[in-house]
Amino acid sequence: LTEWLYVALGDSEAVCCGLRSYPQYYAEFIEQDLNVKVNLRNFGGAGTSDKLLKRLGTEPYQDAISEAQVVTIVITMNDLLSCPQGNRECAEERLTTAMANYAAILEEILALRSTSDTIIRTQTYDNPFVNRWKEQGVLEERKFMLDRWNQRIVEIATEYDISVARVYQDFNGPDGDQDPGDKGYISTDGLHNNDAGVRRIAELLRDLGYEPLGPR
View (tube, rainbow, N blue to C red):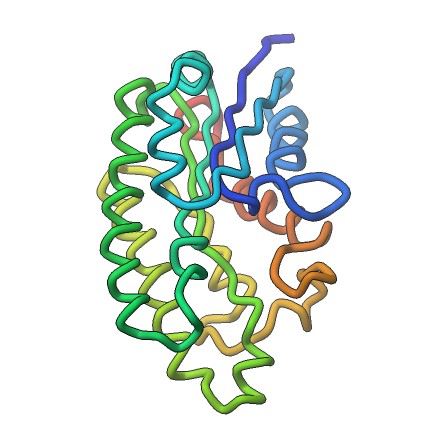
């Protein structure tokens, strides 16, 4: 079998919290769909976008990415979560910084690989706080920033011709008012995805197809 290297980049979303991580499930789907052997290097756990951007300048990251056939990126949510919930001023400030970092991260990856010869994918974030915010009567006020956050991820990724798994829409519904916990996707910590959730993320990545290295 042909061997591929898959490099997963991101925060705890890339390593948590099911029986397997979503990159492990995605790697299995690639193997099943394209009849290749996938070697996964999971660099998840970077935390905030500035930390991942800094790590991308190091030799282990650059060596791995430069050899990869598949790269996934999930980053920036910890930037938002560093603000007190409901603090719009802080969230707006973090949005500007995080998305500048996000664009720079994509540029770093694309300096080493290309969307013409590598499967590069990213994703939006689900909101696990819907039911809590409904009970507090602050859903519309607070999900506004999640809407904006995910919208910017899609816009920036699209500018770089990188396909996006729409996790937010799938987990939270078209209006962002469905709680993914009600769908069985949230772990006992109330924040991360459980096994059903991470598998669903991998399925959404799978649904994007495998261009440029495989059929859609």
